[in-house]
Amino acid sequence: MVEPHLSQRQEKWFASVLAGLERDTGKTLDQWVAIAKTCPETKHRARLAWFKRHHCLLQNRASQVISAAFDTGMGWDEPDRLVDSLWPDPERRAIFEAVKAAAMGLPDVVMGPRKSFTAFSRKVQFAAVRPDKTVGAVLGLAVSLEACARLAPRKSSESWAEKLVSLPLAGAGDVDEEVRSLIKAAWERC
Image (cartoon, rainbow, N blue to C red):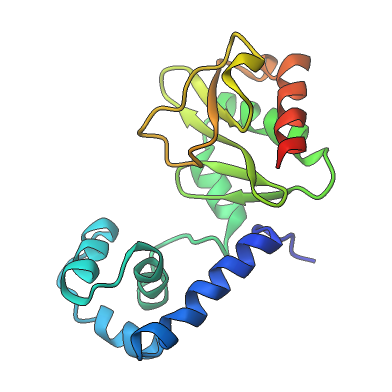
């Protein structure tokens, strides 16, 4: 059995984006894929900009079209490959595994690997972790900054949910009882 990598709410959202594509634009996904194949750009962000500029198709719908039109490497349908690609370094992988154990030990959690981070969701995302060259890894949590002195505001460059605050992790041992309690508190909120 394949483990889900999107929560039911996320699956519903993606389905609604796709369902609204034809209704709102008058074109099917296949027609949009044919249009995408005419795009002169080769990078994802440039393709998104092209769709917006030339077809008024915004990021979410354009991303689905691009994903259907081009082999973009690893997608959300290959969660194990995404995790392996994101966490090849053994020390950073140990941090990830410690965070994963804490998050997945809670009920109804879905792990959703992305290209730049790994998300953990219940109904919505409550935590995410990404490798960091300077620190080791950064854990994002849906808790208030006041919950722990080790927390820092989310950097604007973080690509995970805006509600998450950051916690640097230098090693797997940093995923201590306090961090596990913070993960549980974030899970309870979401």
